Length: 186
Image (cartoon, rainbow, N blue to C red; front, side, top):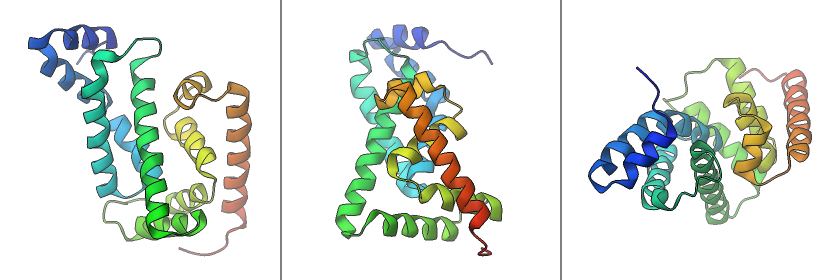
């Protein structure tokens, strides 16, 4: 099946009678990528589903205002990233716990989740990622899992390419150290 171009989706969305068709095409093209982007940030499947719905509601409400000064998927990633960060911050405030404890709770939820089917190494990687500061975690996930170019991540996060490269390098070193130094068997 041929991948629909963003310009086609936007053109269809601009016409009232083809708006639903355009949105369905957009969902088919981006829903899975956005799901996994959010899931790697919040880890919990149910929270991710809720956030995914919120993201695409925002996309629906604002797509007619999209200015095309960035790529469509970077705009959607920006919305998804901001919604995820807002969710994590609210979770932090609600529980009034430090970030490292929230990260530990997320890791525990990941282990208990029936939706996690990774092996011990995958679990160790996810736990290592959770030890990273929030921005490094987001950058690492976007670069490592989503295979985004630094320029694309820069558009999403509004950070310079040089700073992103440095953050990714530091994050990768921290993860490597965590994995090689952590002898605990999960």
